Every structure is written in structure tokens, then in C-alpha cells.
Image (cartoon, rainbow, N blue to C red):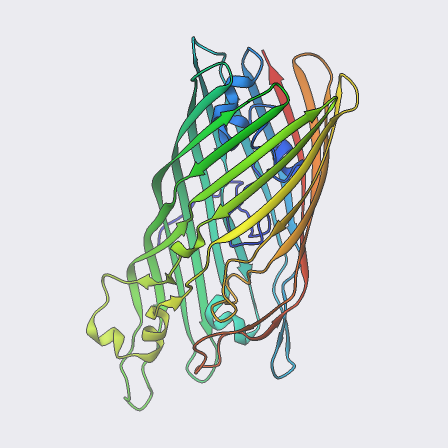
Length: 415
């Protein structure tokens, strides 16, 4: 079985209500809930909107940040009144951004971020049959370039190198217990593009596009699928290669900002193309026809329909320069759910949410700036009834209201 070296990038699906994508990748983007797309206040422009690198002051920029994520236990009430509770999810997520000085009309950047992630764990018999453990851990290296087309129009482009690793564990209890543990990883690629237009010194308009990345994971699995004691079906136990594909969806951002005196008002609309996720399908290239005659193996192999829908997020932020050294920030986001009520499983209990955030940056010197930010995500309750539930192993009830929180500490350095 493949061994994995742990890195501090595990993230649960708590920064974005729709699915497992995480848009906030810096101290400013947490304080402003990623509404800072039309205007950037630091080197996170390299990721959020590379075109904005042109409008930063001269010099090198560095930012390093660390975010602590905490997601409440997911509570579920079955149609028969049974109450089930998942394990709590916590994670530490580091990010890094760098921007070079301008060379003629060009500027370059580099970001290392965690654009997606999920972590769900259940111990009760009902949910663990399909989702005892479901982890997806993702890290992205995103080099970018910006070009000054005119004094007030800039273009940006980036390449996405996305490393993903996943693990899924299913465990069926009963007279014939069965289980599956599948692990895989791989690097896949995409791109991003951006444009920023400043018709006046106070007004900024921007559009960004981030391409879909198909996270095609390859690895190994151990399946324990016992034979029927009276010979009704053969053993389906399998140890060998496995494949899984999960899309990191494309997204489009349309944003504007307007500065009034010392206050910058920000708005961002994001469309995330979750309709790319049609199914969750595990594949076992080394399996034989005999394996598929075992009902446990066949159940582990069966694809799980997703058919998610494209979702929207609406972000409103404000940044106020209280003094020459202190900037105060706050934001609110309204985030739609991407999953359908009849395809929401225990592995990813997706829901709509409202998110609130605040933060500050303080300049100790012209070169050194420290910041802190916080957000609270109010995850709404949701009724679900899985489309195919003959086995009784899928949700048919209600996921209760929950929450997620993030605390970020960051340092910016200019030289």
C-alpha cells in the first residue's frame, strides 16, 4: 500500500458553502471574503487577480499566512428520528504569495495555495457504510504574469499546477462485514486569466476566469468483500490499482471597487461551474468478472450520481484606512448550494450559507506589515432524500444547521 508524507494543507469543506472549493487564500481575502478582486492591497493579487499586480507600488512583495480552520460537527436527523453526528474537522492551512518589481510593462508573481479540500468522518453504521472517511487534500502552485496594456488597463495570466490526494473509506457492518479503503494522488494542470480596467483613479472593474482542473487520482485500494457462507456468491476481496476523478470546477468572477476618501467599497460576483461534477465513480482496472459477482464489491464499484448545478456567490466588502498605518476590513457573503437535495450524501453535506468576516492590517514600518482576520460561516439546515436508496444507506432526512470558523495571521514584507 502506498505511503503518504503528511503536509500541513488539509482543509475541510468549510470556506465555501458550495462544494469543496476554497476561494479565500490570504489574510486580506479572509477579512474581505474574496471581494478584493477589483482592488488588491498586497501580493495576493498574484493569485486573486494577477492583472492587479501592475497597479501595486514598485518593489518586491512577499506574504506568508497561516489559517486555522474549525468546522462544527455535522448533525443529521434520519426520517425515523435517529440522530447522527460526524467528527469535528480542524486544519492548519499555510499560503504564500510573491510579486516582483515591474520590468518595462511586465510583472511576475507566484502563489502557493490550497484551492480546495474536504474532510468528513462518521462512526455510526448508517453513514460509515458510504462515508466512514472522505478526505481530499489539494495544493496548487500558481505562477502568474501581468502586462500593462495601457496606463489603466492590465491583463493577467497564470498556470495552475494542482497536486491532489484523496482517501475514501467505506465500512459495512453486519453478519458479513465488508470494507473499502482507497487512496490516490496526482498532479494536474489548468490556467487562469484576468483583466482590470480603471476608468478613473477611484473606480476599478475586473474580470477573472479560473479553468477547470480534472483531478484524476491514481493509487491503490484494499477491499474486503467476503464470500457468501453457502456459496451464493464468491469473494470479491481485492488489493490493487484504483482510479478516481473529481473536478475542481471553473469559476468566473466579475468585480468592482470604488474608493471614497479613505474607504474602499468592494463587490464580487462569482459563478462556479459545479455542473462539471456528474458522478463519484471509483474504478478498479485489475478487477475480474468474479469480483463483480460479489454484491459488496459491486456496491463499492457503483457510481454515485452527483449532477451538481452551477452556483453563485455574492460578496460585499469594505476596507477603511483608519490611519496611515492601520487598515480595517469587513465583509459579508451570500453563498448558494451546488448539490441537489436528491444527490447530497454523507461524504459532502453541501448547503447554502451566509458568511461574515473582519480583519485588520498594521504597518510597523514601510516594509513590514502584520495582519489578522476572522470569519464565521453560518451553514443552513437542509432536507435531503437520496435519489436511489433501496439499500437504505444514504441520507433520507435533514442535515441540521452548522458553522465553520477561520482565524488567519499573516505577514507582508516589501523590499
